[in-house]
Length: 216
Length: 253
View (cartoon, each protein chain N blue to C red):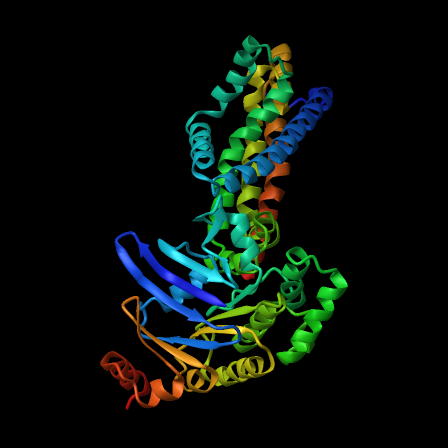
């Protein structure tokens, strides 16, 4: 088995296009996951009925495989008249799945804010919304940024699951190329390297963030 | 100013306060003393609406605090009502509880702008004036973590005063301080007591302070008022054996 540089040059544009899709899916999925996770975490401190519903949703999402959720959204929703593009479904599925995990991360951060902070805010009659945005979240979120960052990296590495619904991410493109030429070494090696090139620096960044958070 | 009518507070089966009746006049300084677990702090927490009464009614300034009037009857207060009545009550905590994510200035202007609707400039002027009073004018742009415990507590007092409260609740405000910092905070409180007409309820273990600061001292034990008398009387000639015993223990005589 030899390494064919000409072949590499041929498939690289397609793989880079796949990388673009992977990055888009990760960024949009993370945006959904970061916002929705925070909403879940805040609602879990709300009145009993809301809390129970959100808790159940989070447990459900955490207890079922991401791939099942992806397939469910892609193949079952159209039967109810909701047809979405593969990438959109991917973003929603990744976003929802990681929102469930992020909500637990946020929750830990929120619980780490001392009770006295809530009480002082209450004693000053601050409106509930301002207690969250002005007092609790500014203290809770910096502490959990590293954990949230790790979840972004995890999501990045899980996007290949979306090839199951035809999203041509890095791995999707690699598979396409490999299936036409029957040369697999180059394409999967490059696919792996592309993941490494992005996720390793990202992991280093998170580690630095961790040290900063611990330092404060 | 403050009226407790048959107030009871239970946590599960544990009765913390039972059938409590007392009034505090406007401008009066009342100190609550007694062994820990006697319910003193719970009284302050009920007044601040950090806890709900299990039974009875609390009134502040003639208005029910724990309840609100609805169709001629008293029903438990909702969040909106509590917030409205609470605006006139300030509280200083044992652990200061300054907001660490804000500067000293931020801590002081937060509630006046958000709750009282003061403009940023008005709130700022008030903050400057109060920091001057507590002797920390130069710390206005510091974060609380850069201040000593005593300084933090003085900022916390300023923060409570920034709301121009009618009632100020002091919950063991010197208990978490290093001994050498206690005097400064107590001196400040005396000054506030002398120069304002704020009604002050104070839970403290500083008997010297209780004696010269309060108009009245209430001795608590087991969720009840054991003795309620002016400080000169209660400290020099306590009538109740339980008070005598408690004072002997804390004063070591």
